[in-house]
Image 1 (spheres, rainbow, N blue to C red):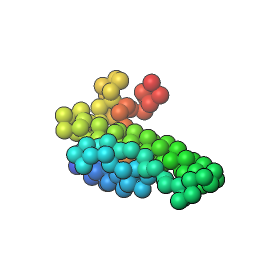
Image 2: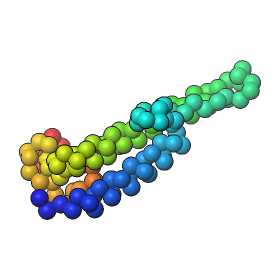
Image 3: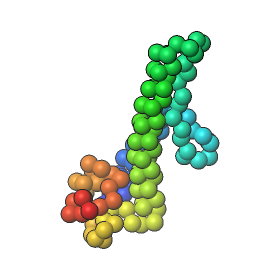
Image 4: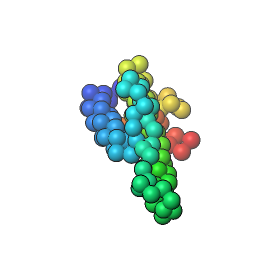
Length: 120
């Protein structure tokens, strides 16, 4: 395999840091030892009878929840790619077993498939 795993490991580790930073804006980490994140709940104002304030808090939570789920999915993919590096299967298509193209990995370092199997 002609893949510079050190280069891609650096890309993945940098992406992981960025994702964790982005997550910290919309979610809280449930445990320092685990990658379990929960969307932050926006607090409504002191007057909870203000329907607009309460609706805004609910809407903000829903947006945080969606963003949190998307970022967690991306983080999971990055972590999975780093695990594939450890077990020696990084850069191998999970469907056909062929080498994933370097340009595909450059565009998406956590890619699991080659271009041929991209939509499978």
